[in-house]
Length: 329
Image 1 (cartoon, rainbow, N blue to C red):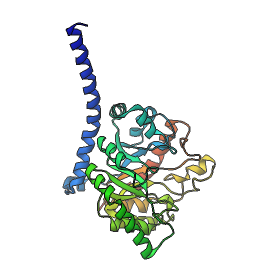
Image 2 (cartoon, rainbow, N blue to C red):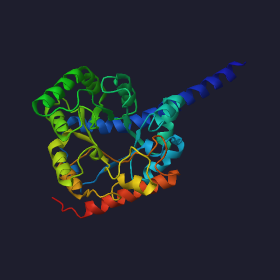
Image 3 (cartoon, rainbow, N blue to C red):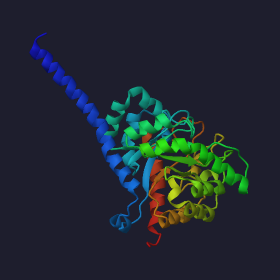
Image 4 (cartoon, one colour):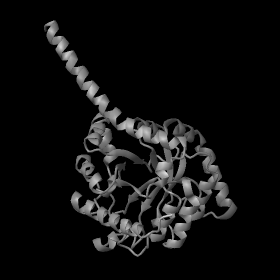
């Protein structure tokens, strides 16, 4: 092979490598800048003066095991700016990402102008996220949602002590979270240390770092709008993820689709108005994810991507209509 041909091939290889690196860098730069701005904690008068708006994110599992290339174009159509990547069994997009590699995934995000806003990782648990946090950092992803671990069925001082013990065990992992700029958000869940409103209040009260926060799932709490609104006020800045998700008729047994959809805002009986007012009062700046679980897990909530998006849009319009009626303060 001639020297000229070799030089041409080397130049082409370098160009391809630069394009791939640029794709990852393009995803990371804007998100890291945003995360850095949040990390300073400096008040921004211009931001405070803007009308309050929810910051929407789309859970990939709402589309079941659909291909990422089919889901990502739907994110902006849902009125969202970012995607929350779920692994099996609820979705399989984390596995898809792993199979395709970081570079191709970054290119896909960039092509559709979508941020990686959250990675959901229940299987890894709160003490197994170190590698995932470093991957999140690479993409400028600011949030990882997981479950809590500890005894269940506690109350009062015993519950507070157990939450304190959990936080103590989390401290080495919080050091990595602070280093990577990731917030670990603990979702409340049934049959778990964090199964009650008080457990979440204790987490917000005792957390030593803004990198340990709450992912609030109203589905798993009493369906009292006033109580849920007060919990939001109590959590304040410790709230990092809000699932716009109600209990409806539940998600543990197979139901007719119309009953299953009662988990969505505007479908079931829960009035989200007081919750939105509380979010506005605390100037909530975390993610809002319109959410439900299908039965069985791993299927999309509707048959096609377009139908899933239409349901998300329907719920988002319901929330927007409610929000428009909240007096500005």
